[in-house]
Image (cartoon, rainbow, N blue to C red):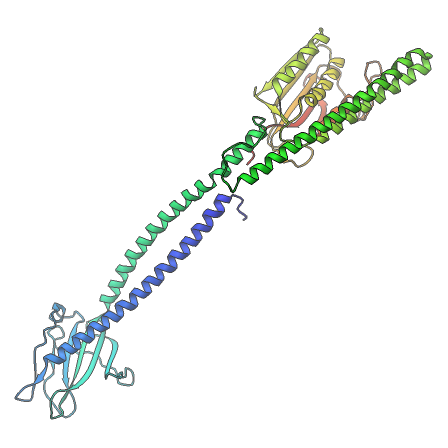
Length: 467
């Protein structure tokens, strides 16, 4: 699974690296300590072995004599695994000397082949004593007098002492490393969050731009992010200049065509009725078509602009107010929920689309028209994929005769008028469709709850959730 959060990525990599590093360090230190403890244990046994050698001699009667004092009570306590033994070698026979801890028990002795002597004529090996203790044995053979009488010396130590020491050290070490690791991860997390905080400020600044609360990426950014902020501001300025230039060109074109079309309409009134009506209808159609394409060019010039924002309630209230004055016999209702609802469209485009729908509704309504603007559900989407995932649903509904499904298909055709007795050019719904499509929205027609036509617009809304 791909992690998209930069903070999560850094924290994950830091956690994995810290965990692996601490585990390796812990194992390495534990291994080195074990080797050091085993080496120290063997050195201790060697020292004790030579203490025993220095304490034992052959007496006047030819017997081994001596009482080694090794300074360790474990050599006096039974079954501890700490023993010393002095045995005669060769033809020299006498009673052996043993530590009080060994008593009458015996220590298994491997052959020289299994545990050979080293260059110092010493050998070290592990055996299990009669009490079940694992013991490390240090052994050597020494000639005690000028007559060549020799003895074998052995000193043993309990291996569990080393194991317990290593185990206790490793336990303390792992606890310390775990505490250090947790502390390091917390410090790293705080450092990463603090280091990435400027990115959160940049995101918040972008949210303000998208919400229409600001026109530039403003903030005190660090040196690493400042070039990005400058580039974004330059892009926004460039986009604004393109939009303004397109609007100016559209306005110039509209102004240059307005007069010739008006002249054609005036001249059409002077012609004979049949010819004049034909010229007038064609001039009106041309006027509508020119206006439609000019609108599309203007919208395309600022399509996807993050600065497009219109508060729905005041714009729709103005439209309803105008429609009430023009249609005094028709009741107009307005519902906007929530009140702060905003649409990601230019105000004049929103007014043109909704105004066309209101005019159609007022033309065919018996007595009532309702305009509503609400937040669309999560399952509602526009005509194509968009970075915006927040949508607004505007609906215009009347109590007129309504349309059948086949009539709805005909009504959406450009320039098609189902009722020739009503005034109009037949371009209203097609203009609404084109404008909504340019904003990645859509127009839907259906029969409303009052029996009349219900025109529903799905348009992009403004949301601060841009993460």
